[in-house]
Structures are given as C-alpha cells and as structure tokens.
Length: 528
Image (cartoon, rainbow, N blue to C red):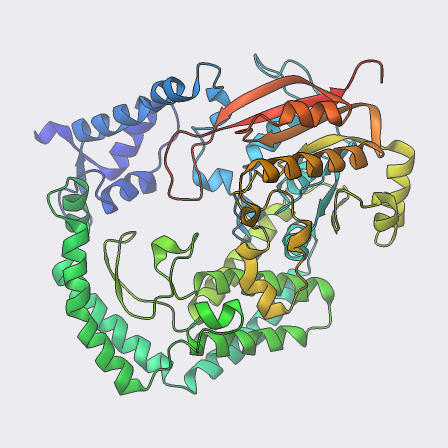
C-alpha cells in the first residue's frame, strides 16, 4: 500500500504522463479538496493513492466513447479542446466579465489562423484581413483577431455587450487606472467602516469557521458525500437550521438591514440593502471620472463585482432562483455559506484581476483595429456607423471589404441576452433593446419562434453580405436543434460547404449531459 501512495507533486507528474497532457499540482489538489480522490496525511505530507487516481482518470477517458454513442460518430473530438486547462480557455481578457453563451478563444483561433490539419484542409484568412462578428457578445472574435494580426468589427444590439467587448480590446494607461481604483477603494473602505456591516461580517465569519470545522471538516466531509457515505442534502439541511439561530441573533445584534421591498428593479430584488448602498457609492464615484476609457473599464469591474454579490446561493449564481438573505447549506462548497453583505472584497479582487488580465493581453496584442458597434445587425449601415468613430477603418471596409464572418448567433429560446446583465442595466441606467434580440428565451422554442429566428438570421446575413468580398467565408457556431440552418443558408443566397460537429465539454450551467454544436461553413451560392 505504501508504494501506492504518492505526493501531490509526484501525482501531477504521474497524471501528466498517464494522460499525455500537463496536469499541475493544483489540479491534483482540486481533486483532493473536492473529495473526488481521498486525502491521506496532513498539510506538508499530503498523499494520494495512485490506484484511485488511475481509476478516476480512466472513468473520465470513457467520455469520448459515451458521447459518440449519444451524439453520433461524426462528433469531432479534436474540436473539444479537452486537453486545455481552464486557465487557457479563459486566458487574459476572456474572463474580464462573465458571459453566458460565449465560445472559447481556441475555437476562433482554429478557424482564423493559418494552420491546416485532417479536418481543416485549407486556410481561410490571413494577417491584415477584416473579420466581422454580427453577434459580437463578449468580444471573443475581436480579441482573437487582434492576436492573429487581423482587423475585426463586432456588432451587438446590447449596449452592455458592446461595453464589455470594447473594454477588452482598448489600450489603457495602467498607472492612471490603478490610481483611480485606489481612490475608489479607499473611499469604499471608509464608507464601509461607517456602518455596522464590517463588525457583523467579522463576527459571522468567525462563527461560521468554528461551525464548519466541526460539522463539515474539509476535505473529509466532501469525500464522504462524493462516495455517498453521507446524505449531504439532508445532513446539510439539518445543520443549516441549526446555525440559523446564531445568524438571526447576529442580525439583531448589529441591526443589519436585509432586502428592500423587492419591488421595482432587479437591484431591489436581488441585493441586500447595504450592498445596494455600496454599489451606488462606487457608481457615483465612477461617474466623476472624466476619461471615457477609464470610466468604462471601471464600470465593467463594478459590474463583475456586482454579479458576485447578488443575494443568492453560490450554486445558483449563473441561474437565479430565489433571493437568499440567510446562511445556507452550500452544495458547491459543502458547508454553511452566507450571502454577500459588502462588495469591498470582490471589488478589490476583481480590480486586481482586471489589471492583470488587461496587461497580459497588452503583451500579446498586435497593432490592428477592432471595434464593437452598438446596433441591429439586421439593418445596421456598418460603414456609416464605423465612420462616426474611426473614419480610416471605415475607408478600409469600403476599399478592401470584409473577408468573412466568424460568429455564434443566439440559439432559439435559450438566453435573454439583456436579462443576464439586468443588474448592470439598472445600476448604470443603460437603455435596453430586448425587442431587437433574435431568438430570445422569452419567445420560447415553438414553431413561431423558430420561424422568427430564421427570418432574423437571414436578414443579418443578407445585410452583412453588402460588406463582404465576393469569395467570402462565413463560419457560424450553432446548435441546430431544429434543423434551421439549411433554410437560413438558402434564403441568404449561401450554401453550406462543410460542417464541423464538436462536443462542448465545459458548459457554464449545471447540465452535464452530452451536448454538441455545429460550426457551419457557408459560401456564396454557385452562379450568384
């Protein structure tokens, strides 16, 4: 047995060789901390079982086979990017702000760069080309086009999406940005100390630490839940109720205000009163900033902060269910957790993280042009709109034209793109244009919604074609659940020349079922 036990470091080396890809010590520590493999020993001498580790990875390796059984043998596993770590798929500015429904940068790179392989048999774009993304979202195509030395134009109907995208690709005076962050952070810290919240949270965290250490020791408790030795749901509920008296006593002791009436906007429903006060304080401080590019990135940092401070459980952060204003058993962290009573911690964390990510991107950026325009891709005059912000870029579009499209249109009835950032729209008083969204969740997935979706995508492609070169290449990433894209292509005067079916392994939601999307390659119809 002793020969079977290895250190965390040795486990990472063994796993890297076994899987033929890099596995770091932190990857192994994650498995230990979340009870996926058993921890043996204490800090400084922690060991794991080589046999248990092997069994864990062998189980994972069967995923490709199982998914192909469910989704078909035409599944292109190479496009799963399975070997990539999360830090690679969320590199630099790609995690500047959360966004539902975005594709990973490596998928964009695959089709835009100059490599060929068994699946991608020719090069479609080159340095200096102009790429269009008419459903820009969070700007992944723009960022990757920049890295590859290409120009890019994004279009999005959502003002906030445009803000995220443009903040990612802008250049900054980092010393100036850090100075403004420092001023706001100091002001927020002082604001926080003038109320009861700091003392309340300090005492609450102390009580939680004692309670969780006794009843939810880590990682032992997590391992028991994973191995079904403990019914985590029932045990957690029991302990949740047990701690609730302590929590309520602290609320009374420190005179903490919880939710407002819940009436009115998103903020009143999903944020604790003191958090609202802090958000308004920082938002007002940001409004005092005169430089537009600094003001905009500060808004993105505050929005990211705000998202993490909604009054909900950690496991429901991506999809809100109900407001939570008490301590609760957390199915994500396997212990009793609390809602947020202050934004200060997250504001500090995300401020540092934003600067780090922006600097990382700055080190790899090329001297090319990228911009996201706010507008309806069905009708927008790209040259006219672009001319208002960058006349030289507009001239290039007229003379050189756009070489092609790489985009991920919305899926039918899956996401309300404005609603996912409702908190930011409310705080910054941004205009919402939900009526212009194509295929939003609120319209459902029925026949009428499908037909409306087809009409919308066709209009976007026909409008985009005005600005494309004759021999264009269009790549659309879609989950064509209702088989709509053949009709879309035909009605747009295009033909589908190839399609790549890829497994989507890392979804943002809790659904872990086998799931695939198709990258459609479209070109102009013959004879047109």
